Image: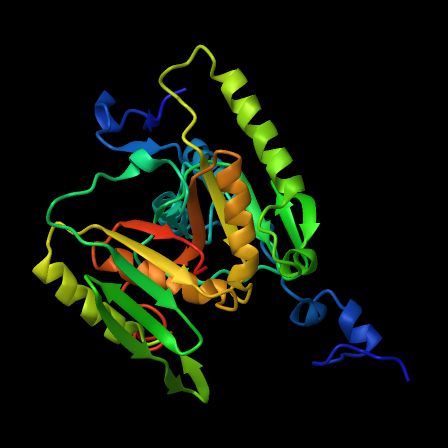
Length: 189
Length: 157
């Protein structure tokens, strides 16, 4: 049996009738729909204001990766643009390039990481070369360190020592900014 | 291209007072703004805790007369605050079945220190090798919260 649309189904003769057939013809829909422009403009304006309030001219300074879960901090300042050393559970990277494995850094009692020192010295040399005629921007030795919250201090210590040896004495620890009333209570982290 | 188009003259050749806004360029502008702001939006706010590494540049802070050497050690037992020959141990507290550093007590002790020595602005944080990065950041954050802004991180041995 053929599938038909529900509703009244007149016989073929009635449907074709000039007098009676009109009762069974369906009304055609109007071809155009009017947009509610006022509410659309309202919505756009609200979105623009919200996005402008969240806008940050600094952009992304850190490379956020899945395997680095940052701790949170309430009293941190704004991060400055500087070389980034990332320490995840697997690797230590400098500006996205892998320098060493975290496992290697956990072994032994020596403090320095020669590979990291080399790239840091190269970075310093590059900065000083670029700003040789720019006394307003002297080398400040700024470096950002972002590490997973579970990384032991032994690894951080070696990274810090290498930074220090290469002239990067101002280290900024990266953390997720948290407002005072947000998240877990201070009593125990 | 006008922002608002005047309506045609009304009855009797008088100019109509109402003007129609051309919404299309306005919507275009808003759409472009939304697209640009969405692309450049930074959703995670990152904070930076600036510390000095031991052995760093020596001219970072000047030794003031009314300040003392304050050391905060992070051990597996908890915090150990050393200042002017006095040692204050702040043991870990158990919470949710885990032993955690007692930040609240540390904050109170540092507040007392700051009240007695308002010019004190420096502290040395010395964590043990096994201390996690999160605990180090929390300790530095607590110190900075109590206006001890010159934090030096040094290994314990």
